[in-house]
Amino acid sequence: MRIDETLAGAIRITGMSTLAVQVHRVDPSLDLESDLRTARWLATLLDAQFSIGGFKFGIDPIIDLVPVVGDALMVVVGLYPVYLARKHNLGRAVQTRMMLNLAIEFVGGAIPLVGSLFDAAYRANLKNVALLEKAARRAR
Image (cartoon, rainbow, N blue to C red; front, side, top):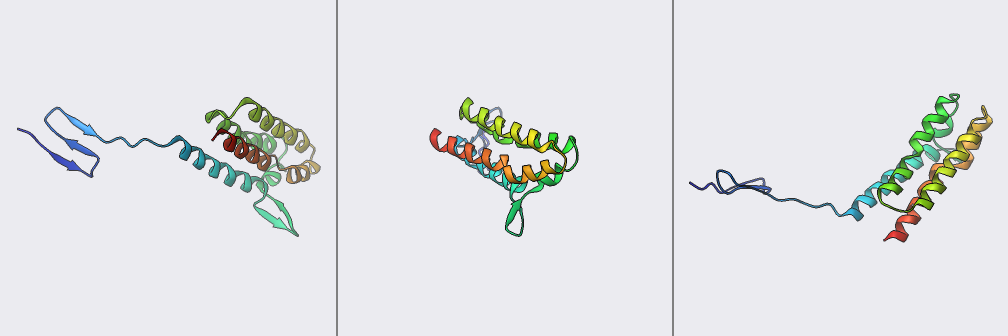
């Protein structure tokens, strides 16, 4: 006895012991585009989501008001573009530059109150996303 049914167009049963499945491969370049959009959204949230008197800032300098923990948390979140550069093999040079941007922001942001102003002005996350996007364009 042979069963030939189509279930939602993806699975076809052709016999009692045979199962055929359609596999849709994801184009890696589409994955990169999605990752770039997410990184851009995150960087905007962290560095340029709000504006007061024409000065843009994000949640990074606000969270950095919490001594040590705020700075450390923002560095961890800021590592996302570095992770993407590694994931998509965009080069060690771009990863190193991103880490340097994060280190500068961490050290500059460690000074109470003044450090939050430094974070708002330096915008390491937006710089890192720009580096990531430039590296992605070169890789294509």
